[in-house]
Image (cartoon, rainbow, N blue to C red; front, side, top):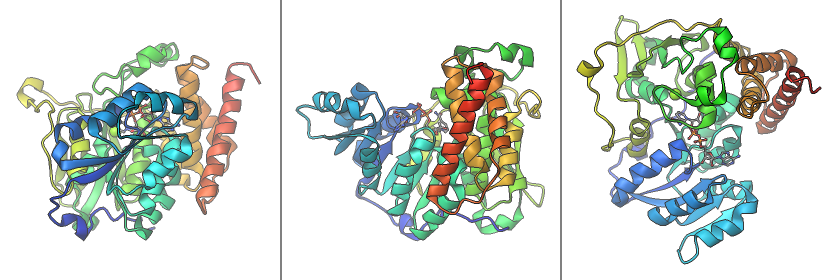
Length: 406
Ligand code: NAD
Ligand code: MG
């Protein structure tokens, strides 16, 4: 099967733009969102902010909206509307609340939209931005995992563009020769290995949420930090890479590289391997997407290879980290399987974070869910939501079985 290629580059974007770029940040209060705000605040003459959205952090959202002179600030929790109005009193920023208002924020006219909501909750607003032909900087990988084929079809139908923000995919975007895609042999995603890289299964069975979110190299939100610890993150990224780049499902490899200096690699048919390197700071891939098709300066630590001294690599251990194998199986099964995988993983990670299940139960719950729901074709968005619902339901049941509450 020929993989659908999102239109990553559009002629109109190559023109020299002088007017400030109008931008919206979905999930501005999160880790990727805050890094995006930081870059924009350092180059205020280059950007005009249309909308910012957050879930519950009213004070940070209001502070960002005032600082960046946003037109609109949206808090996803409808109960916090009054608090947001109060926090914005005396400013020109419009306030709105609720999930529908988040989707409306995405539909407002901004040429560039950062999709940095975590999980399947980001699907609807991200699609809203795609459907009006925006350039969408995609951090929210769960969107592509659960609705990849549909999303890519929408990107093409509406002449939108997806720019990868995930550091691995930004790396690949920077080194992938799109005009000579047939010469690409493999795409190699690097993984730090997470905080439990060298832990035994017995030790991992007793891992606490605090230990799981303490990532050695990157500072990130809680959900993706747990995904890094289980290596489900690399599984989700394998699926993400398949949708973003013109490659087949079996052309994505994962290699553990604890220093997180090489962010990913592309190998070509002549034996050449290109790698993109940098300090592990999300502001580099965010700046790449923000300034694309140009570059902008980012205040990140410069890479000092002499100080680092050695870069090391090892194979991932799929016995201790079964999530990687599960994600690959879901990619191969196709249809609804990745949506079920993603939904079950969201449920399991939340249950682990609130100490309902143990760390090793996360992959076990996902495995149970995949076994319980046969892969079905996904004809439309309703089918994606149905698969997401079913994945959540069977995963909740699997969590309850593990805690004896069925
Ligand atoms: P985070 O938890 O720090 O932030 C998530 C954002 O989404 C916050 O603004 C939160 O308010 C908002 N949000 C959460 N639930 C919501 C809901 N139901 N409705 C509306 N808004 C909601 O997460 P993060 O680490 O910034 O990650 C965001 C996305 O980027 C994830 O998909 C993650 O996988 C991806 N990503 C993150 C990093 C990183 O370094 N943090 C790197 C690569 C990819
Ligand atoms: Mg990544």
